[in-house]
Image (tube, rainbow, N blue to C red; front, side, top):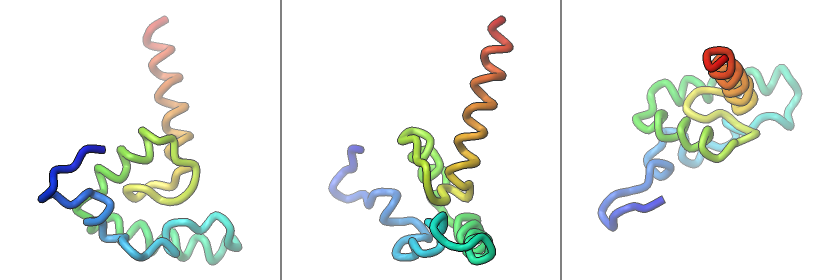
Length: 91
């Protein structure tokens, strides 16, 4: 990623900076994970760089965490669905 000297990278401007405990909860019991996921998604909802964050996760095939307000596992499911729709359109 190229960044000019006077521009701060998107991940340094994110509302989630220094709050990773809310965004990577896969290792926790389900009840606790869901509670923290809700907090993470609310943080994303007010973030000015959620679009860049989401695009980063898509481009890098992130498998864990919440990116731009969406769980990585859900991004993967969405990606598979979109690929299937593309294949159906082409046939």
